[in-house]
Amino acid sequence: MENTLKVEPIKKRDLYYYRRRFLNRVFSSLAKFFADEAKANGTTKSMIAKKLGVDPSQITRWLSHPSNLTLESISDILLALDAEAEALHIVPFRDRAQPNYAHPVVAQVLHLPALKAVSSEAKSTANDAPLKIGSYVEGFKVSSMAAAE
Image (cartoon, rainbow, N blue to C red; front, side, top):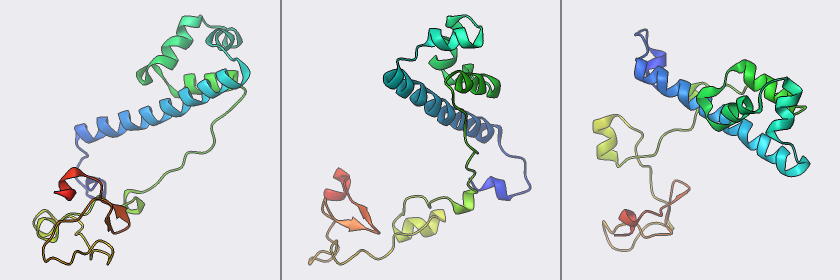
């Protein structure tokens, strides 16, 4: 996300996108942890509800959709599961992996990272021949049908 480096206000669309993405990530981790505990120890939503002194339907609401969660409800569920979350891992956008590479001409026009030299394994004997499936470009295996045509 490039806008975080500018002084301009962040677009509402970006705010909502990253809020939802973060909530979805937290929800996925919580739901997976609950599923693992249920499988390993037979933990049920009713057991969690009893520990927290809430109606079992509240636990179902919390574990059925990310929008039902708050930081407090996440902490409560984890506590009822005899667990807690570790420190959050925060990664600046500048340190995240770069996006997919583009053809040098497209990259220049759109200001994207350019496709770098193709490894010798991916080079073809015919000039301008397309990459075949199974070729490697920058360590990434080419697997799309478009690349094979």
